[in-house]
Amino acid sequence: MICVGTMYFSGKSQCDKNFQFESSKTEYQDAQGNVQRSIDEHAVIKVTGKEITITPESDHKMVAYIKSSTCNWKVPYKEGKLTLNAVYMEKDVEKKTVLVFEGKDNKVSMSMTFEAEPGKVIKVWADKFEEIKLP
Image (tube, rainbow, N blue to C red):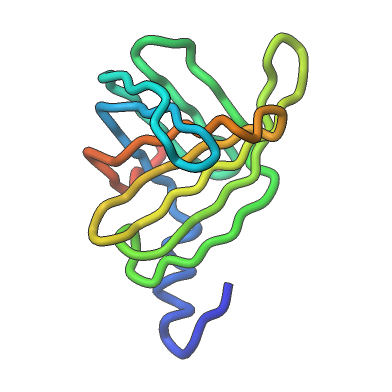
């Protein structure tokens, strides 16, 4: 992360926070961003410490473990980007994924790509995006 003056402290403080992202629509896109299909569904994505939990209403819960991250919020949760490299287990096979949370024009989105399926992108936009406190 490249930071100047006090921007380092405000930007860095956002990178260590736990947050929850909720959406009501999921898009399945190709690598060029063309929508292949779209589903109206509620999904909750929680990022806490080294773990990401994704719970869509129509599918099974997925838990991924963060291996590395790159964070650069220019305006916390509104303008900038957080990239998480993670792994999850599917049928006893470790799968690698990249999740990118991006704030642009006061909208936050999340894109998820899979190493094994580089042409597949899952994208959602936040209806609600907030910091959360853990017990």
